[in-house]
Length: 397
Image (cartoon, one colour):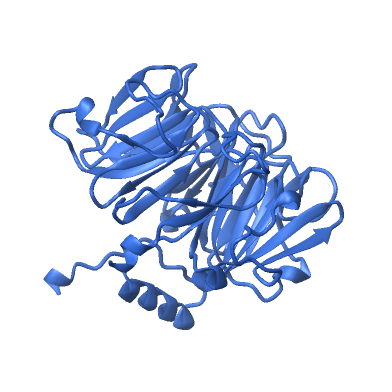
């Protein structure tokens, strides 16, 4: 049996007992099994009412409270047969989940959107192409940025085009900037856009100050001043009412609603401006990944050895019964909030995802050991740059 086939378990914490699978206490870490013979997991996603992944066999498995059209939930894991939607099955390119949707991106950039409203929606970007798709952990909308850099905002209520407005001409030499879109993070009502020149732009109603005191516009991304304008922005994630930003130097900044400490900034009340996390617990950490749930944040350290869970339901998270101990699950109290430090390496896992109110710890073997070794060692020489999504075709070397 191969290494990939032998990995059959993951740890799941259902923050609000949404799935009601484990009647004992779902908010604790519970060890669950992946389906047998499920191949190599390419990507796993978690939404409010669904957990799903696709594998190297072009299959999608899921468990859910959603009533996905034409498929009955008979067991914990169920398989989606894409030939039902298209007899000429096209290879899966990516998978996304938010509050109400499971979004399947095919290699030809067609989107199949499965909803809990008992309908199937298809969106075709086959002529234009898709740069990327993004959505929030607890929202009913998602964003598609196409090859023409058009920002398509889609939700139940309506579809609209969001504009990127360069209102920072007086502060930068535009000839030396790159306004192409690097990434977008979504909250429930607002969005955060980062350009290739590492500038931040905000958009949306900002109804609960998830962008802090920023005066945002509903349909236009406008420039935001930040204390890290000269740094490389690696990633950004949004919760329901907060955002966190990861920089290439391994530091993290947070902003927004902070009732559970989810911005990672330990002060009472809303964090009005992007603020660097400086707690002694993180003093020697170099973070390389971030994730958000509704009111929670996960910070993952260099080499994916340690994960910090901050905010939502963390106070209730305890080690699963099988072989857990205090060294692998350490809790720290800061003011009225709790941080849980989890030793992923000791537990034999290397990846975390969050969505809805839930957290998942599992093993991602999508990267080869050779590529993992390369990325680990290249950081020793270029500590301010984080290499992401590198692929090498050895047949052309």
